[in-house]
Length: 461
Image (cartoon, rainbow, N blue to C red; front, side):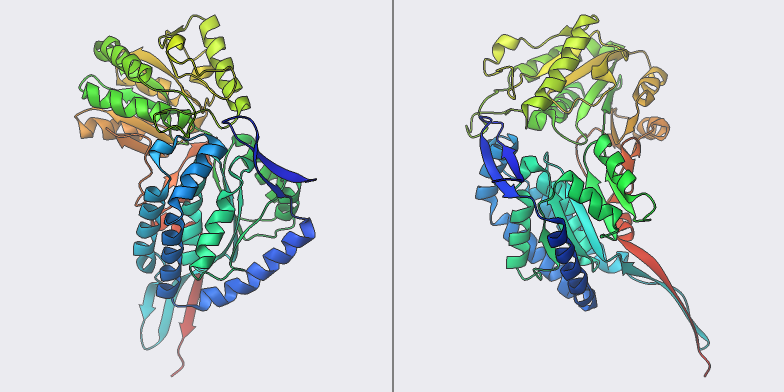
């Protein structure tokens, strides 16, 4: 198949799925159909839109057995963990539940002389560019509220999870969402940039790399198309001297290594109070050493291959750089015979690390975490903020006032206490610095997927 997108499975490096790239003119026609369908969709009562979106989510959930196996083939997540439907449903249900209040007009006057109000107007055609690491969870953050708010949606998934958008659209359209309203497109980078430059879309949401975000900003320059960008991360955890140590180890190590470390808000660096450092490191090493690396189709596998061998090469390079500068790896590689030097990569914990090492500065997005000892909150804050990213930070303490005080000083989008690697749909999912801009979910998510429109109506009688 010429000019095709090919998903190479990390299981064996073979082509798992292949789809032809759509011609630019064909996509222009698809966008025109979406724009026409959007007007009719926006005119439907809100409760009808909500019901159809939730029916689409349920239909997607009914495909769970197929989705789980597809994800294992496409990006390597072990089948033992199931799919993403639990989180997809949680987020969609929450956004459906707050829609009426979030989208309600703000009435400033309703008198005999005037009606004055601000209404929320859908943007029109929303373009969702979804990533491969959580292809359904990340996409639903925008797809569900965008449709509920009255927009049309065009979705483009990463080549690594080529079938995810196709499956989402099949589920939603099968549940009654108009087929022109929600469409999946297979695009290469050049076609995508051309369409953005032409202002084909009225809002663009992208989750992916910093480089990808920059490309989208350049393509959109001068079009005034609003953007939502969730880009890189290097999320820290800080274990304070009064933390529940066992709970901190269990959650932080899961947050660092689940999905082979390929999580947007996964923990990539940990700072531990001096009094707890040795015990934390010992327990963390034991935790990681019990993982089983292997074929994700094997139900015994707890950590699968990285989605692509080039991603694993990046992590190996960071680890090698750190070791050459004096860091120590604590996880015995011989415990993971499946590490093949390719996509299958053993987890690693590094100590004696510094911020002169790439592994503590640059996004790893893989199964490695560096752990440093800190004297106090001041030192921990300086290290947590010594980073060009800002998505989440995880604080571990029994003192919520202390966590709030420290949290206010962290340059980040979300502060967790005694939790990590979670997206709360009632809160705005956002970031700062090179992590991007905009915000998904919560009331603010609805506001970003609509625009304000003011009405000043003077009555003459």
